[in-house]
Length: 130
Image (cartoon, rainbow, N blue to C red; front, side):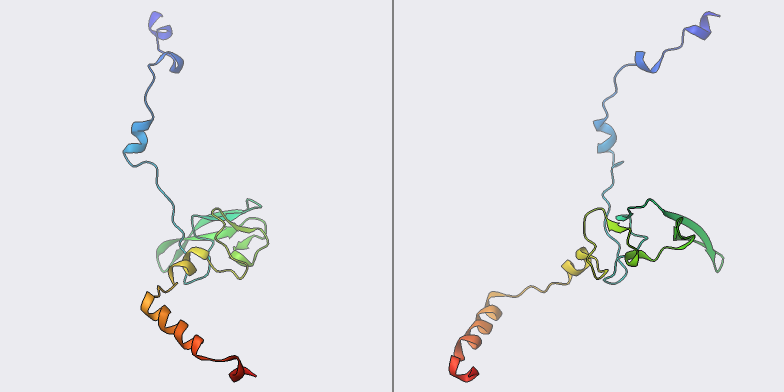
């Protein structure tokens, strides 16, 4: 009988440092996964404000594929077209594009090209436009 009552309770166990858990790589950073430029509901940062988004396993040609499913409508999630669609990092633009995907496509202009474009604009006089 003494064995039954001699077990240590979680409150009696020694304190474990939780920082070692994060050093080993348990905490993962999530990145947006748009399809082209458009936001997709399969992105880990996509959020349904109605909490109706569920990832369902479906078979396609013998393979299991995860598909976003809306519990409210009972069909496949329509993504950014839904009024409850959102992004956890506020990267969903009103036209359905992901701001992080558009941000990557911005071209870098060197100083020489910028100077050349400015000099071409300065050559024009106001009289040319009137």
